[in-house]
Image (cartoon, rainbow, N blue to C red; front, side, top):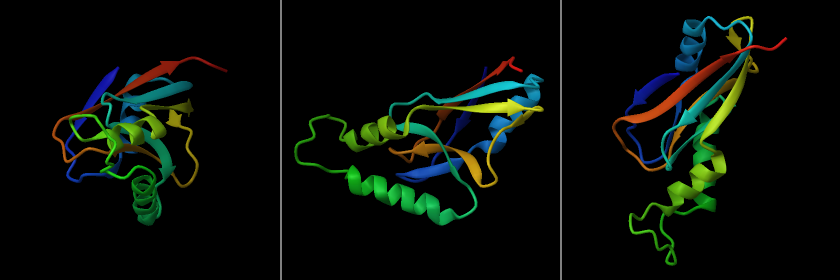
Length: 135
């Protein structure tokens, strides 16, 4: 398992981590299998989404803000980041991406993103576990 640490600079952000995951796959020597990417935080998730048009990220984060506004008069969590927890639970803490011919199986426009919902934060972490096997 490979652990990565990143610093985030915005309250909400989606950081493309595809290159780091590809690096873990190459280092593993696995030809066929899967890579599991997992955030180690309750207020940051992992998603696979379009990586060609940066407006997708802008729209994605805006729509999550519409569904889960940062302040809600009935929220009781004392840290005040209930919206970040809800966004992470919706996006999910992890993604599994298949590996074939020692490469991630991603569509033309797909990338893997670390989703920050409670930043900015230093030392955010995610792990990549590469598992070999398959046909």
